[in-house]
Structure formats: structure tokens, C-alpha cells
Length: 331
Ligand SMILES: NC(=O)c1ccc[n+]([C@@H]2O[C@H](COP(=O)([O-])OP(=O)(O)OC[C@H]3O[C@@H](n4cnc5c(N)ncnc54)[C@H](O)[C@@H]3O)[C@@H](O)[C@H]2O)c1
Image 1 (cartoon, rainbow, N blue to C red):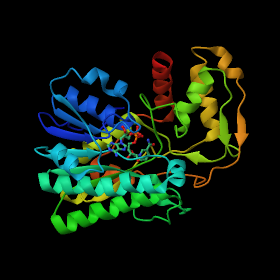
Image 2 (spheres, rainbow, N blue to C red; image 1 turned 90 degrees about the horizontal axis):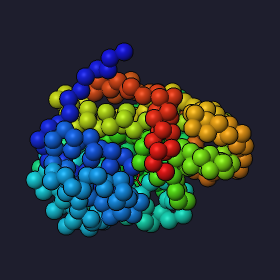
Image 3 (cartoon, rainbow, N blue to C red; image 1 turned 30 degrees about the horizontal axis):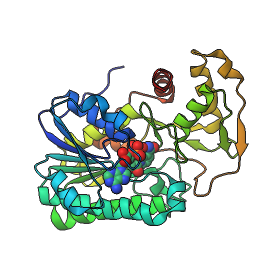
């Protein structure tokens, strides 16, 4: 089936913060391909040069190595830009539980710096990475944008505060913003290493090495896993929408289906067995549930469809197949 068309920006100057990270580097790549000037601001806290290596020779790409906790850096990076796609933050619920102070400094003070820089630069739009963690302890499913619960982690607090600040910057300074509540994004370039690695790249790497992945809990917890290309689509639609009613609000960014952890591992084994059939025999371990984890997460994507024309092309099966191919060829 044909996707509802959307227009990519062209010949614009776009700042992508966190542009050396998983989502940010994918955004930089797509925007550069369409003849934009792309500025990437990143301090490499979790981002990697290898994510942007192929872009460094492009005369339309500028890397600014700097920290969003420094206002002057943000102001310089934002000057003369048309759009800002703000992705820089410290992700991970467990990281924020271990060190809430640093998560707060980067995700809240850094965010406020970027909003201030966006206002000073007079950008057309500030599109930012919000998070499904904002639904917190709400048991309602599917999650609908205007019905949230109480946050369950310092990370969730920071992402909720981002939404509050964005709203206030619109009301008080007229800055146009759109918040994108990402639901468990996965795909090429997502880091499989480190204590705070996301579940899909971590499990792929372990299965490729015939190591047993450990599922936290009995595997019944479920997520609305979202392939990177759907996230790129939403960033572009958020940036380009001409509809005033679509601005200064937040959207779920998801596929709108949920998969539990046991099903996820089965799918990964199945798709990886195309390269190495012994992966089918790797056993799974189960550990305790993780503090701050919500049992189930499923998004309604009705608002994004209605106001931004969102039409995600990649379901979990197609997304995982693409991701597994990429990891097999790049790890
Ligand atoms: N991946 C997901 O499933 C998911 C879900 C919800 C929300 N998000 C949000 O999406 C955004 C991108 O996440 P990601 O998965 O690409 O993570 P990532 O860690 O790969 O990317 C984050 C980038 O921000 C950079 N960064 C961190 N602190 C910085 C600082 N002080 N100054 C400048 N740069 C800094 C990192 O170096 C990294 O390149 C984040 O805001 C994250 O909270 C991601």
C-alpha cells in the first residue's frame, strides 16, 4: 500500500542536537541527502563518531562538539538555523535512577538552554524528543496524549518537564514547538553496548554471540516497539506541517501495536537464524523485574494520523528484519 506523501525540507539550515546519537545521526543523514545544511551539536556522552563518520566529508555538514549544558554553545549552534530537532539528552530510566542530578542537568537545564537558543535565533520550529515514559503509572491502554499518569523515574520527570517548558515558551514567547513522545525506538546505529543499552540491540548482539539474553521478569511485559524510519517520518512531518492546529502540542510516535519480551526474543531468533541457524538453540534467562519499568506500553497514534498525516510503514516484523540485517553486517 502507498504511504501518504510527505515533503522533506530542502535547502534549509537545520540543527540536530544529539546528532551523533542513534536517532540524531539517522536524522542528520536523511536531511543531508535532501540538500539541507545540517549542524550537529553533540558532546559524545553516548553518541559515537562512527555514527556520523560518512557525513563528515559533506560540505553541508557541520559538527559542533559541545555541551547543551552551556548556554553560549547552544546560542551559537542555533544561530541562523531554520529548524531545530532537539534529540540530545541522557536516555535510560536506570541511568537516571543511578544519577538523577546529571540526568536533570542535561535533560532539563540543557533543554531550557536549547529552548532559549531557539527563541533567540527565531527558528521556525523547535521539534523535540519527548518520551512515552511520561505516561508513568497510567494503566490506560492505548496511551492517549492528554491522559498521563505520575512519572515513575527521574528520567520520566525530565521528559515531562520538557513538555511543560515547551508549552510555556510557546505561550510566553511565541516559539513554535512540537514534542514527539517516542515509544521504544529501534533500528540501525542503536548502540548494543554499555550498561544502559536498549533491549533490542543488546539481545541481537548477545544472540549473535550465542550468549543467553536475560529478560527482566517473566517476559510478559510488552512495548510498542517503533522502527527508526517511522520516527524519521514523524520528525519530518512535525517540522513541515503547515497546519496551525497541529503545532504546540505533543504526539505519540509509535506503530500502535505491542509485543511482549518473549515474543520479541522469538522474532529476533527467527530473523537471525537466516544468517546462523544455531541461534535458534540459544536459551533465554529470566531475571527480576527492573525498578521504574512499566508493565505494558501501547500508543494510540490516532492524533499523529489525524493532525500530521502520520502513516507508519514499518511494523515490528519489517523493522526487526531490517535492524537484524544491519547488525549482522555492521557489528
Ligand atoms: N531510543 C528510544 O527508544 C527513545 C525513547 C524515548 C525518548 N528518546 C529520546 O530520544 C532522544 C535520542 O535518543 P537516542 O536513543 O538517539 O539516544 P542516544 O544516546 O543515542 O543519543 C543522545 C545523543 O545526545 C548526546 N548528548 C547527551 N548529553 C549531551 C549534552 N550534554 N550535550 C550535547 N549532547 C549530548 C549524546 O552524546 C548522544 O549522541 C533522547 O532525547 C531520548 O531521551 C529515545
